[in-house]
Length: 489
Image (cartoon, rainbow, N blue to C red; front, side, top):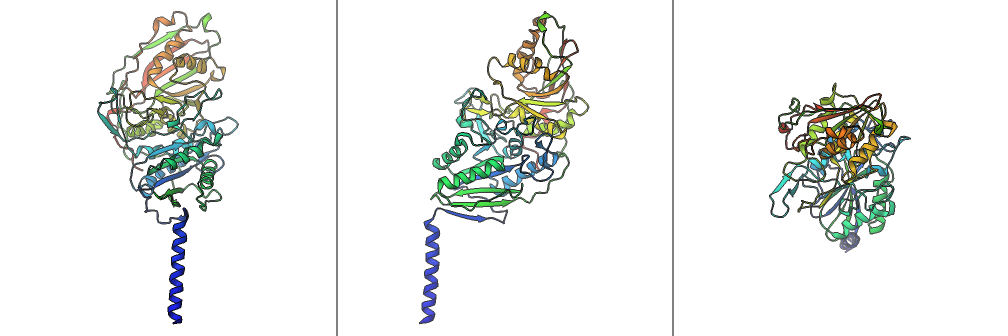
């Protein structure tokens, strides 16, 4: 009888334990088996901690530029494969949200935090998105190895005049106005299963997880401190609202050298085999109306990497073929140019995707900045972003000229500028307007062909402010031979 009572008591304990587990809406567990992916039936909030000056693994961040080192870049490439295979179980991502770089300025030089957006880029290219092209409804769909990165602010302000884009929302380093929390709460409320990936520094990720945990009443046991760069955290919410914290350890040990592509990219002569740009060599002599222009300045203009596999197809990012070009850029440009600074447009700016009928109608314009980003890393160069004006504003060409050619801080500098190719002729024409008879040498609006990703335009101001512009240089990468899938790491 005593044995029966003991068994019955044990049974009651087990039942009560199970009921207690079912009655709550949260649990916390550490997944040490890194081969177990998340369930596609759940809402999976996947938090990837990008390195910054405060929290990083030794050797991942350059303290002088606040950018990734070669080792940090290697870690990001390896982490992409780990996320795709081990965390998502090779399934497609649902959305990717990244830190708005200008919300986290670092060092006395106020370098933007490009690490968070660059850290997740390779992962974005391991996923796919299907969009239409020019023509809108009824146009053919095209699926590319690419995925948009949401990096834009929710609201605009005088301090940061960027378009309002709730569908492109990124993460604010300090969560101003609780926009980060509202974003994640909205995902949970919408209750659409999938994989929602967030890339930001530990300060932003830890605060976001804690605030969601408190707001939703999950009562999860969250990490109290930074545990290193290899841990990935996921809050997985079942259709019934039960939440679990799953911690993955990628155990990555990246090398400290710049990444070597699995196969070399095919070279191209100037002009390349995919296009035949008309060569030009403009020379304009400074005059009275050129007063105040910079001197001894050289700027190399490059276009973003491959982005349009179908006419009008666009997600704000480049496609996987472009990753080959971006990662090959340091070697391709070696011996050709020697910039002292790298500049691009703020990736939080919004690209107006008017022709797109599948997916978002607008996108964060991330591809120019991510094209030149590996070059800055490989050469330990400071990386700056232009957020003072909008690139797609009609006044953008003249604003670009004022910004780069009439600010004396650029005199004596050599700059690599990654931009949007259709803006280059208007920029040069706006610059020529400051020279007597400069307008007579104005370039045609299509002077940079739409299928040309390889050309480099060289703009020089000498010691007297005299101007020369030519397009004889090129990166030397054959666009037609780049693979459609991202390089495997």
